[in-house]
Length: 203
Length: 203
DNA sequence: GTCTATAAGAAGATAGAC
DNA sequence: GTCTATCTTCTTATAGAC
Picture 1 (cartoon, chains in turn cyan, red, purple, green):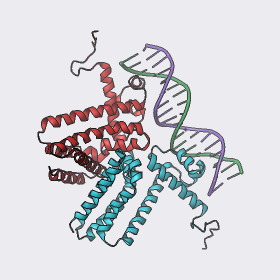
Picture 2: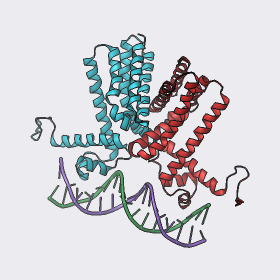
Picture 3: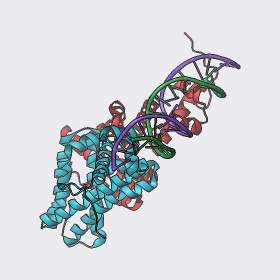
Picture 4: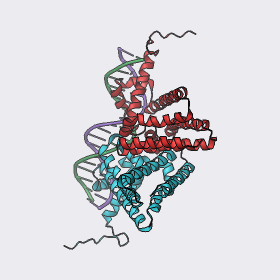
């Protein structure tokens, strides 16, 4: 059966509907990060996206569904990011340090809003166990990827996983404190310490 | 002028009104921690405390004021805690390790709800800058106290502050990750690492 | 696919009787 | 000090025209 997609954009390869859907997701993603999930209303998404209420409902029946789509979107972004690191960085130790560098690259947003993964999970963990579980998958991607990198350094899996969790935790701590004190200097200094820690991990 | 407080309890030294006020604060404190500030409604506090709506309003005009009282209450608890550590523990290094031990002692709550200071600050940081600033004072108490302990170890103030912030950040990271994965084993292991780190800080 | 209008309920805040 | 009742606004969700 031949598919007819006459209205597809040649630039993006997305149909009109797919573009609207993506625009809703990207708008909601930003608002959920900057204001929090609970504190972002449906109307906020309507205003910020410029897409009318009923049309958003056409794509997502509930706000809950929007969050699920946002999480799926973030998961895909993380997968792409990790794949690019795998491609571009040959040494596992340098790959691990690239993770620390990511924190430094996001300095401004982290100082202002905290870590997107951590703050979302912290919010959902209080009252929405199913959604917390979905958002936890973002951590899983990094944890599994970091575990693999430590294994490539020559460590056994349990130890590699332990180090991966330690590194993730250090990143979360840095993000929380940098946000609490709105302090880029603290963030920079701690990322430096973290890279040194990576250098000192024995193969 | 002589004060007449005929209705004071002999056990607590609090008048009826002071007891009601305290009961509201303690109830709200627990709910804000377990469910989050935004996700706790005025009616939730009414139900959980057993004190009727109008009477809560008699003590606190707005939910905002309740939060301020909750933060003030927490600040006082932290001051008492730190004072007791000062009294009971002679060595500064042992005092610092007592801070790490506190995380272990709160293991169950942290795994279920995260750190009370960190999760509150993360939530308020998104949309309520004034309230975040108030809640930040909880971190200030620990930061200043830890800084003093590191100074007593013989370190200069800037370095002592840096180490205090590092320690606070490690604690936050542990709390976030233990909560994300609901993993007491990770928490125990990381607290152990943290105590070793304290032992290795050079005087 | 896109939009307007509105229903149904929950939220915070207030008035005033007892 | 304690309580009931209500106002107003905001929220999510839905119905249905175009």
